[in-house]
Length: 253
Image (tube, rainbow, N blue to C red; front, side, top):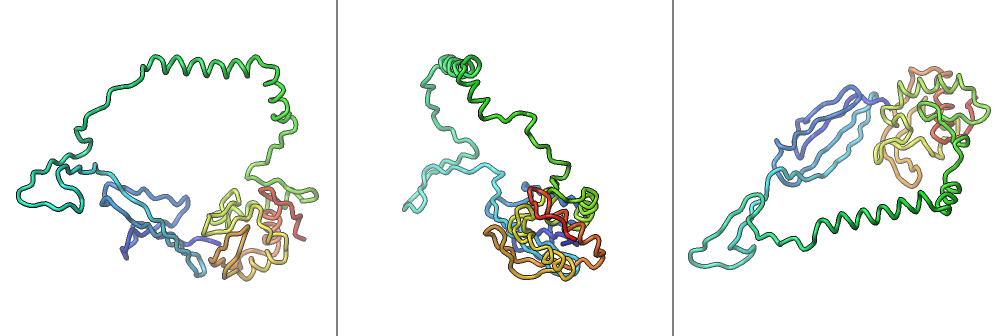
């Protein structure tokens, strides 16, 4: 899916707070200009070729100090003249005396931490635990840049071509790491639907609309078709996403 623009609205306003057209999509929200209390941020993502995704995020603003009212209880009944005391910020309340000696706290911390260090530094048992838990450095696999770890039999050149197509057309929604956006764009990492190569090519050619469940979460957006991609480009990007981020479904012929 290719994003056309992202509109951000605050509460019930019909005018967008901001319109973001180019990645990286970032918005600086100055909450000092928003009244304290409950608010709703509405993010509307518009896609090229039609379709949109709406996400609403409730949040609360609390920039100013609370006012403490002494002499009137909420819901209480009063009569005659009532004298109230108002305190803004930190009320003048009595402070309880310190009930412990800070020096003892420091000494106790040094003793406890020193004991832990001595155990791991001097104990043979600790060395055995580290040897069993930590894998040898030679066995640690280093994933190539971009998170792609091609499966056996996949052409590296085809993976590189697919990566370029993916970053130009797909990464803005499904992210560089293939994790997608929760509630908006499904992840490609660990996506069982990628096992069907024909399904991927069909989505790239014709788009996809309607609910789609991935790993127990349902997504109900719209993915446009990519008519600008050649058949070779589609097979390359399909191969890339099928064999990146831990996926190992093999190449698309």
